[in-house]
Image (tube, rainbow, N blue to C red; front, side, top):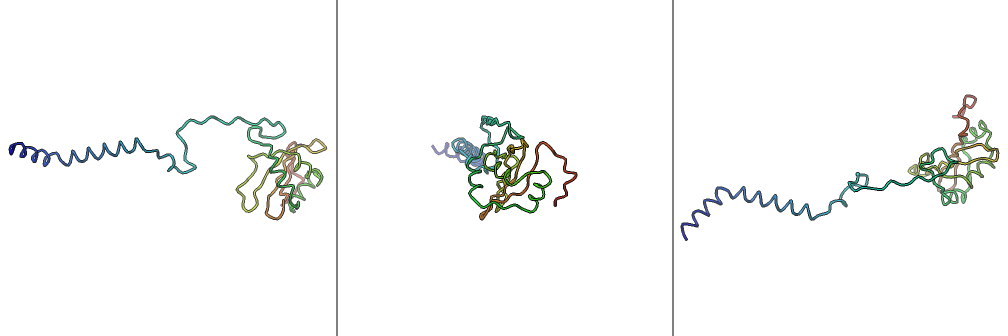
Length: 169
């Protein structure tokens, strides 16, 4: 038996570090297989799992039919506050012959274009609402959802992009 113990000592002396390293690698590989690290990914990181594409919402009244939504809750929230017109909005309304009544009508009946909206604009998220006026003008009106009021930021005539006579700041 004493002969075998010499061989074992020699073997572990010669190859012990290599065996320890290989056992460590095998253990780490086993742990990695069993663990789910997807929860550790940042929220903006791309996922490796297949995702089904979202179907577009068909709304021909908007300029971008892939992303607009009928945001009734957005429209209602904006309508529930006092409506304030910015100086720039008043100027653009004058250039584009858009009345206050038409702004209110679009706010009530229009559809939110999420692509043109900026919900991250603090403290007043901006919503681009598109619709038709009584005069059949297709317009986009940008509203700011401020804590104390809804502000009309600007008005855009989607049928006419000629602003050569409009000198608003």
